[in-house]
Image (cartoon, rainbow, N blue to C red):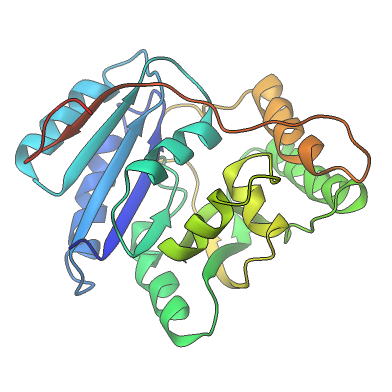
Length: 248
């Protein structure tokens, strides 16, 4: 039985993956739960997949989901969730802006409060000014034109109970990105103040066009007026688990 799943979308992150694992493994191995680390290779064109395979050779707790092409972070997250087995799930970015050392804070908050999800709220964040402006604008626009209210200054970093995801997944009338559905479904949650680091290495996977596309995918399906219906979309090329079949 797996108690904890760590889901990490990966896109052209070959320069950071070994450092991410170096910091992540000792943290999750000390939380007192059986765990799995699910890396979702979102169509990387660099050596990310090869590095993930090398890490998996050393650690049987690593599972890899390889997508046939780049479907975007939100869809990669959904793919990872579909393969997760843990009763509790943590989602985090791969670039070390979400600090592995903060995972116990999220888990403790989830256990100590009567909520189904705990979301990291950034009280300080390092990164490009333009990205911060776009992010703040997104939350303002989202709260004006949609039926849901995202808390400001958040990303994907969060911990939630598997049952919360099953609830969201089984509401057919909900559309949009998987994480935005949590708010639309009114899953009870709380935020925890954390500090966000700068990217460890390389460039972020989101240029302006990709950032705007993600914003539209998150906002439009939930608009007060009918604009679009968008659902998660991904195709898995290969699934790899140390003690399981390499194809599923």
